[in-house]
Image 1 (cartoon, rainbow, N blue to C red):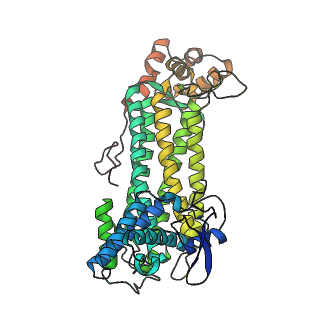
Image 2 (cartoon, rainbow, N blue to C red):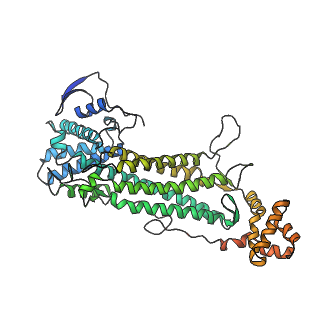
Length: 485
């Protein structure tokens, strides 16, 4: 991610003072001295604070100003100016004014003050009197309760998008499974031939894996609805009105259409991040399922002539700069790389969340950045995989049927009729001679051609083609709408 522009060209400079030092600030910038100090002291990497966090903090600032008006702690003109400025920030109108690196103070204080300063300057311009970033915009708040609340808000909003993408992938797999009917293929265990299975049964397993991952995500979300707002510095709520947190959470819930509440224990909400660890653990589970599904489809589509070649994958683009006509499973490769990245994020989040000392965890920007990056990556990758791979998959029926009937493991159907040892002898002879099972069975003796044909029928070996659809969403349907996690 490239750093956003922040009007930081020093063609026109003013000198502004915060509580500690004086520093030059570009005249065109909406931010103030604390943002300028962060730009100076934290020029680290290219990852900027995610805009979802910025927008979520702005939503909190709007709700805070409205709450303070109701509580009689801000006059009407001031409250309206702050709320309007915050709304403009929340809708992305001033995204170029938030240039700070993720790699800053572990509480997110610099980005929090970046938001306070921008809102204060916008409100000052509208009101024609000074609006203070601390005393007015940040009244009754601390970075320690605002930033983790913003983390939760942003994660909940991107989780909704993730669940929509996940439902889309499950729908694509379900449509594909339905289109296969009772077509039979050879099953495989240990990467070796096994007994037959239908294509629909194979894909029903994928659907069930994704259903389990979806349930894990939904199970983790209620804890993320709990916000730290109202805890201020250490969880005691010092310098804020007793009703402030509850009213802000209620406003956020109504405005954002999510069931946000104040966390039942604000000390834990500031010092720990188990809610996000749990949710990201569910994303890791989703990655495990996606890697299995993608790898299976890639292997079944390998070839086309020197691999398994049962599936024909969409030829979206040339696959090689040197080998003409080569087509690669690029959508699957992208999906698998995303899953590897997300699993790496999960390790970093677990380490970061374990480092909360006393009343505050100071790895919040890392946890926020990785959580949101994982949600974005998985949402995009699943949508791309569904649209550009799954929807276009076709069975090479002739080749799949040929592999099925060449498999020595069809001999398993003879075990009830002649016992394991004699069936094994038939399979070993067929393999050694390169002959068919039918030829080997007749040579071994004790079975007629007619009996072999009656007993060894792949279509009779798949349990009547039975599949089990796994429920996932609140409606119990594999295609349940995820519009409200």
